[in-house]
Image (cartoon, rainbow, N blue to C red; front, side):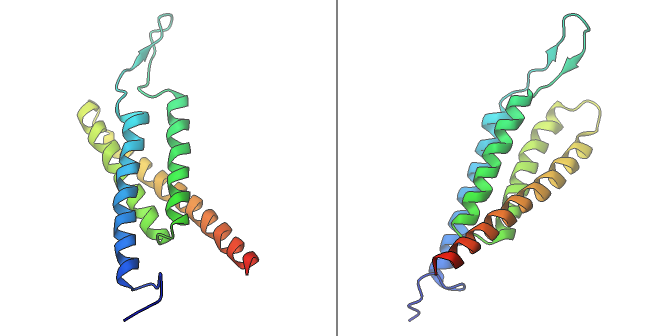
Length: 143
């Protein structure tokens, strides 16, 4: 019987990784829905007639901040870097794409989805790399 508490390859580690990935996926979807997914209203400037939206800058900033917190949390509970990056990127991009397909009349939702996917991969990897580096440095100092 393996008595190592969190050894990679142990049953406990695999279960924690799967549960962590499932929770991360759910929270990533909830972040998209609460900040962006539930808002489909475009704003029309009464003077110029320009149509903008559906998202306001504060919504995007709040969404990004929550995604940063999720990426750091996923790293701190020791999910593998690529698990965090892939789960968050796929879930967010699929959620965004599903909404974009239904609202798009131009046929350009795919371009937007590609940009969202690239941004999610790059952004989440940068945050995860930074959090993992900080966590490792802290662990070395505590030894």
